Amino acid sequence: MRSIYSQAIQVAVWLGSAADNSDLAMERLDNDFSGLGRKTYDIHLWEKEETKAILQLCQRQYWRRIWIVQEVVLGKNVVFYCGERSLQATKFAALFEVLGDSLQGIGVAALFDGSTFLRKSIYQSDTAYILQQRAYWHSNLEPIGLDVFDLFHAHRYKECMDVRDRVYGLLSLAKQTQIKVLDITADYTKSTSEIWKQIFEAYCRSYKPDKSGAEEHAKLLRNVFEISTTEDWITTFLRALPMHIYET
Image (cartoon, rainbow, N blue to C red; front, side):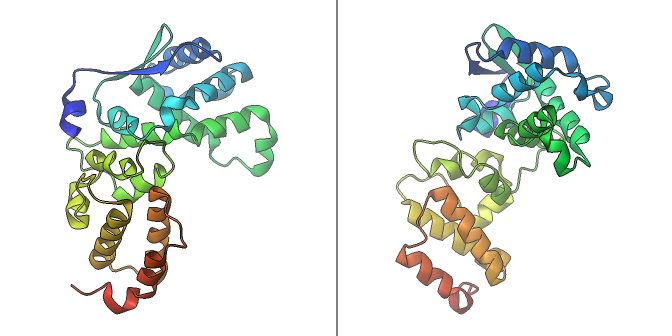
């Protein structure tokens, strides 16, 4: 999938029909982020109605699905369509660069201001994570990929038909050196428990974390695969960490 999206002339993304003032949001983003002087743009000039419309655009169902991440991140030329409006991904991504600057040093008291709270909600949305990952990916002439566990953490609650998609749907974005070390390949004949155990064992043997680090990554993978902590094999496996996990 990496080659398909990265070599495409254009990736067209359909966000859905116009609703919730989406025309206003798309127009505002298209007009304000031309790519010139965006670091000095004063986002405080936005009306509350405009800010709310942009937040609703960032909360659309589209952003919650696991398989859309790679198409947005990998595509060199991504265009978002909503109703009859369109928006270049570079302009959408510029929003979060400006938001990051505007929210620096904001105290808790400032969050009681409605507009500030809306801006922070936009900055903490799934859309922000995905477009920031896109910006990082394209900041390198030769993309080296993203940390696989950072990807798992950022997208651990993404919607999917099969929880294994939360791993396989991100493989094209991950550092290939990590994928090789963790020996991850898209294989739907394996159960979630088999994949969880394989990734976790490979992680511990390769990175040799202390027990707290191992438990932290175990918790992350359990969230990704929606595995109950009461499963006996998980408890047994964690207890056995110091005894066998570092064996080569």
